[in-house]
Structures are given as C-alpha cells and as structure tokens.
Length: 324
Ligand SMILES: NC(=O)c1ccc[n+]([C@@H]2O[C@H](COP(=O)([O-])OP(=O)(O)OC[C@H]3O[C@@H](n4cnc5c(N)ncnc54)[C@H](O)[C@@H]3O)[C@@H](O)[C@H]2O)c1
Image 1 (cartoon, rainbow, N blue to C red):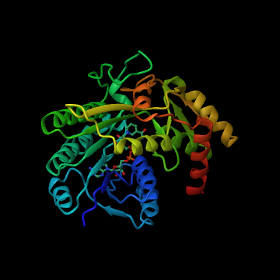
Image 2: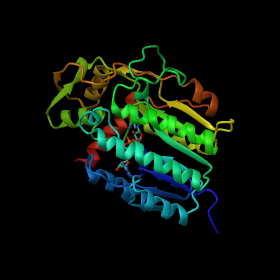
Image 3: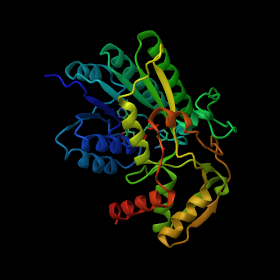
Image 4: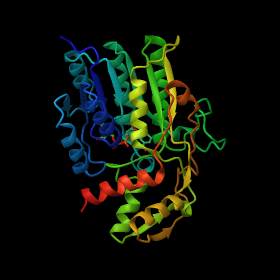
C-alpha cells in the first residue's frame, strides 16, 4: 500500500535538514531524504549527520542532486511523496560573491525542478527555505513578511527571493500549496562551519585570529535550530488554503544581538579570550536582522524558547565532543 503521508526532505545531510529529519523520524514519520553531499564544507560533518539518520529504520537516504530533473522525476514516479520540504540549496551569503553560478544551478534550476515534480505529482504541501537576506538593507524593525523585498544585496538573496515568486506563480496557476520559510541565522549543534558560531568557537579553541567584521557591530536575530524545526513540523500539515495557496513566514527568535556580545557569551562559556582582528564591513553584508514573529505566532502559536546562552552552550558541548 502507498504511504499517504510520505515526506521528502531535500538537503537532509545539511544542518537544518538533519535536525528536521531527526525530529520527524522520532515521531515515527516515514522520511526519504535527498542530498548531493557537495563539498561546500567538510563532507565528514554531512556524513556524521547521515550516520545518525540512517539508524532509523523509517529513513531512506538517496544521493540525488535536485538540479538533475530526470533523476528526481524517476524517484517521484516510484514514491508517493505527499509533503516536500526543500532545504537543499547553495547556502551562504558571502560565497555567492565568489561563485554565483553555484547559486544559479542549485537554487534556481534545482528549485524549478522541485516545483515541476511537486505539481506533476500533485503533492499536498511544498515548504521551502528562503532567508532573512531577502529584506536587504531594510531598516524598519522588526521586519515583517509584507515589507519590500525586491532589493536583494547579494545574488544568494536574489535566488531566494526568486524562489518565493516562482512558488507563488505555481500556487496561482497549478494551485500547488506552498509555504516559504524565511530563516533568520539558525544556530545549534551540527551547525555549519561557514557560520559565525562555528568559526568563533573554532578560532578560540585553536588560538587562531578571529575576524570580526563591521567591528562586531552587526546585529543578528540568532534562532536556535530546535525552535526552527518545531515550527516547520507544525507547518507541514497546514498548507495554505487561500485562492492562491501560497504563504510566507519569518522564522526568527525576534531577539537580535550584536556580534560582539554574542562573542562575549562564547568567550565566557569557553573561559578563553578571542584573538580578535577588527575588520570593516564586507561587500553585501547586512547590518542588522530582526524578524517579526507575529504572523507565525498567529498561525501556529510559535514561541521560540531557547535562551541564547543555552543554545551556545549546547553548540559548544557538541563541538568539543565532535572535534576533540
Ligand atoms: N542556516 C541558516 O542560518 C539559514 C538561514 C537562512 C536560510 N537558510 C537556508 O536553509 C536551507 C538549509 O540551510 P543549512 O544551514 O542547513 O545549509 P547546509 O548547507 O548545511 O544544507 C544544505 C544541504 O543541501 C545539500 N545540497 C546543496 N545543493 C544540493 C543539490 N543541488 N541537490 C541536493 N542536495 C544539495 C548540501 O549538500 C547540504 O547538505 C538552505 O536553503 C539555506 O539557504 C539557512
């Protein structure tokens, strides 16, 4: 018999995909996961995440690249996916300055392929990752979903904004229920090596110099990964029901802090001082993010409940164990 609630997570060996898959597997959902295991960062970290997921008998991993339409079409033909969560993408704001093509291939062509199979196989709900970066240098805080987002500062943000408008058009024409998730700087155990928390902890423990851009005055709305995956879990079974069944939500903690304060918390936890190199702003950097969570609160009663000190401490415990 075909499974009536089979869930596909793309990017399941990635940071957020891994946590989401594990959360759903623990609830006995049947999950299939795609990942192309690219080498944007340490593949061993992706393999370590996968090792944990593969312990669950209700999980099936497939090394599939979403930019390969034939491959995903064949797989959709064989499996009755009902819910798709697209987290596979070329992530990272800064890398898009060096290598915009990676963003075109994975985030535009790849996402187009996901839209195509989703409408062809009439899935019940497509959820997909967007980003707080779509707000650009908007300075009316907290940032609300209906604010202007047509001035992306980087090509990464441009591809994610494009995903939102591509999904909207599929929801309009093919009535594909879809929901865009604007994540705000997600952090936690198994986090990405290209992100601030990982880099700060790594530099401090290895007594290396640490670059603090904009002299640590950037403000970020750091959001703990468990809060993020709890929100996604609740949204999966709530596809938009409007005439154009598309919606967008910020997923944020709504408590921005300055990078220098964030670094202080890390230093206090590790009981070491960082060797800081103060640097100026980098091209494409956004000075502040602070998301409103009113809309997602109304939808699912979303209340992020991880204090930044606790979240950082959980990351550090994981890091010390993983890289001892
Ligand atoms: N982590 C954050 O703070 C954050 C913030 C905003 C948006 N996002 C978005 O959320 C999503 C997940 O982010 P993450 O932090 O887990 O990143 P990640 O890089 O850890 O995970 C993405 C995963 O997708 C895989 N992948 C990339 N291209 C692929 C392709 N063409 N086919 C199949 N797999 C592919 C990668 O191998 C990786 O394992 C991404 O779309 C990212 O842009 C993340």
